[in-house]
Length: 266
Image (tube, rainbow, N blue to C red):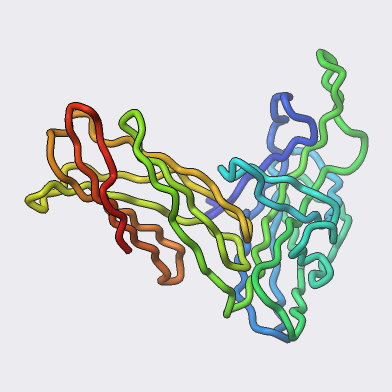
């Protein structure tokens, strides 16, 4: 059984049902913490899951996360996105035939410049070569490809971030997460609510966010529906990975008129 296999079918035309999977890759995401001047040599293995030979071409594209920063990505030509790693990555083979039910290793090398700062990103795509498939019902041409995302980040990257702009409306607390650093952030934000006696009355998670450097994204969470009148503290924990955490404590009161924030503490 294949372990840790990531399957990703990216369609170039939206609104079309995905074609049957023909490729499987063993790494859908490569994270490389690097130092200036470092050289990394690794490989990715691609599998043909069908009973027919498949022609494959390999190429690089840049990518960036886009608003509303829920994981949505834009894929663009190599070298066109600020922070592209395209000039640092070489790979082989770039085109090959993958026999039925076989696999192929693609060797890649990342040559990091001495002055690297922050995060650099892109995707290595594996696309079926030959005549593209045409959907006879819609007339849309479908290109099937699978890809590996690359996160190449300096070990001393700046992970500055902030939780800001809190407000409570309609039984929901909202705020903004701001990436003030120089690398992509994918924070894991959790919360718990305590009453005046220090007892936890609620806990949960905030929706996942994917932010490029300099971006800000809103988040919301529901306050407990059966919240008695009184004073409460809501503690937000944003786990930035690698041991970095942001904590905010939001004090509020609840009454028949609704919840009102009274203080925000670090």
